[in-house]
Length: 181
Image 1 (cartoon, one colour):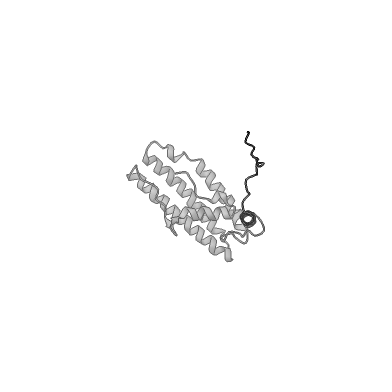
Image 2 (image 1 turned 90 degrees about the horizontal axis):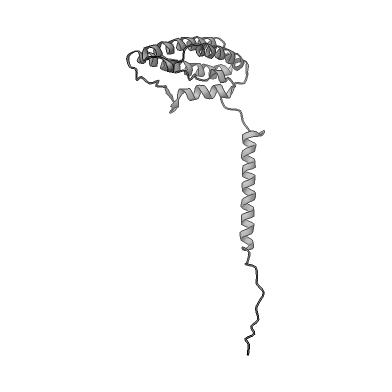
């Protein structure tokens, strides 16, 4: 006699619980909403201007021209990094420093008198501190060929971060710190 067993048709594996599926869908929707909000703040109408953005762009427009001319003049100098010795490098850096000091004087001459003036004055003071660092570097190179450019700290950052940040926030890219040393 043959064994006749009934075979049940195969069943599909059970799906997750209804509660689990609902929680996953809610989590996905929340993530999409969160990213939409982040993108709205970053690129949309919710984006706020940087705190050091000038209310009147006149200074920034004029400063860009002044800074571009200074950088062009410094670009015409021999590259300090390619100098034959530390003394020659010090002279090249000193020449660049003189041109950047004149640039800062020109910027100070057009400093606004309104609320923007305080922000610009602080930025100019940062530039003067950075120029002092460059002068000290050129002086050090005259006696120490291994001298390094040491940059003043401000709020636990290099002062160049503040100079460059203000320049970028106000679309004065030519007024960022130079990379000629």
